[in-house]
Image 1 (cartoon, one colour):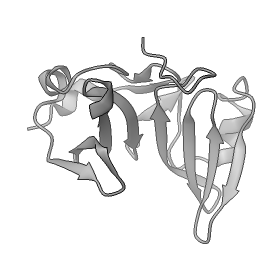
Image 2 (cartoon, one colour; image 1 turned 90 degrees about the vertical axis):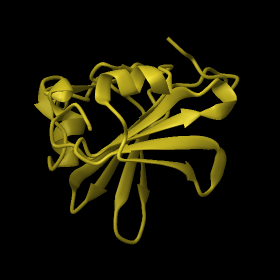
Image 3 (spheres, helix red, strand yellow; image 1 turned 30 degrees about the horizontal axis):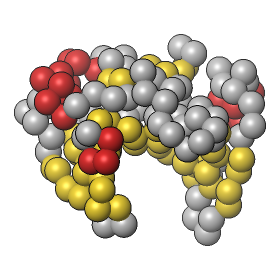
Image 4 (cartoon, one colour; image 1 turned 30 degrees about the vertical axis):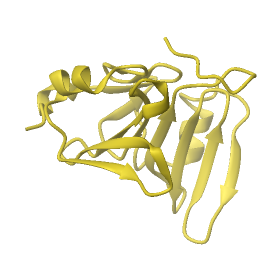
Length: 152
């Protein structure tokens, strides 16, 4: 069962993680904090990754087998996710990019049929957007100039 009280505040920390989850954590450490996931599965397109899905937290955690099973990627649609003291989800993307995320430079926008993405590769943040509002966020462990993960 997921420890819902654990994440009363889910602050997005670029390059570090989300809330008290930090990149590089092992599955056992995550389970000690959050409990057993609702689902564990291997990504269809990436057999070197496995994902913990926490339904109550509206969050998926990706662990990299080739990096000793360390936590390397987080995706969340939890309405409690914040950055700079502001809630991110269901906010106008322009308000967030011009407000709490204005210090993060170099956003790249991609248009798809039904949604847009705003990605900052340096901080490895993706904002998924529908109707100009943020629907979920993705954050990953950053890479150095040689495509090597920068673990804490």
